[in-house]
Image (cartoon, rainbow, N blue to C red):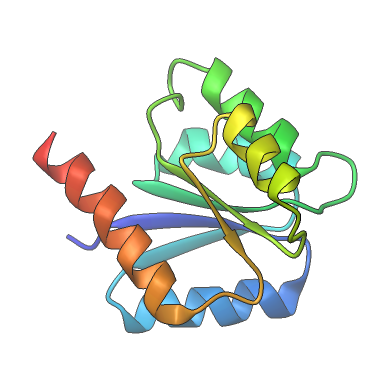
Length: 126
C-alpha cells in the first residue's frame, strides 16, 4: 500500500505541482487549501507525512503545525514546512512550531525526495 502524504497550500497550482511530483514517486496524496481543512482531513486520513505551506491566510503553517503537535492523534506525524521565506529565523520558527524540517520554495526535487525517504523510512522502521 502506498504511503499517504498530506499537502497543504492555499495556492492551487502549488498543490497540483507537488501532488503530481509525489504521485510520480509512488506516494498517495491528499490535499487541503487551508489550515482548517487540513485539520479535518488529517484526522480522517491519518497521513504518513504532512507537507505544510507556511504562508496561508487565516491559519498559517506555523499555527497548523502547533495544533497538529498538540493533538495526540496527529502529534507523531512527520511535518515538513515548505516556505518562500528564506531567512534563517523563519526556518527556526518552523522548527520551534514543531516541524521536523523546513524546505525553501522553490525546492530542489532531489532534496524533497531525500527528506521524504528519510522520514518515511524512519516511520516504517519504528
